[in-house]
Image (tube, rainbow, N blue to C red; front, side, top):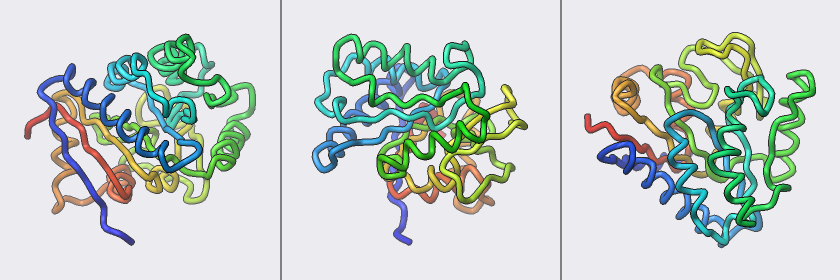
Length: 234
């Protein structure tokens, strides 16, 4: 297995972090679009990423036309529910791009919440498989406990499925879907945020090569090309 290439990027504050995150994603999308007919972008919800989406939504990129948008983490609620990650991504990023005809509706992939959860996960996995079965680029945001997407430090997951569901999330809401550890660790390029002072301990633990690695950290450390973006200085 090839060694990981990891870059640590430190921003002065959340404003700069959002601006830097948007720039990094735009640059990577441009690079990927030059060599691929379609690019698969994985996204998550949360306060830390909203500013990045808002800045990306104002960018005119040729790469948008061939970008497919998937959720790497979703709550088991309706797509219009206030807790839906899709709703946040749609309002902050996708709707403004659609309004300017930067992207196509066909390239937006939402989970079908009308199905039983197992079928929802399986259907979403098939949609991704039709586009190569992997994320080309994914934006993640670490929680205070270090979790990324729906991968929590002390929780076990299926080793086969691309997307999975569970009813006992350590963090509310309890019922969630997530990209599996296998899918996330196979991502070609990833950006993970450790934003806010509450994430300081999680960042230190992740960067401490002498510490025991938890399940979420193992996923991140397997990604071939990882950028850690933070507003913490130590």
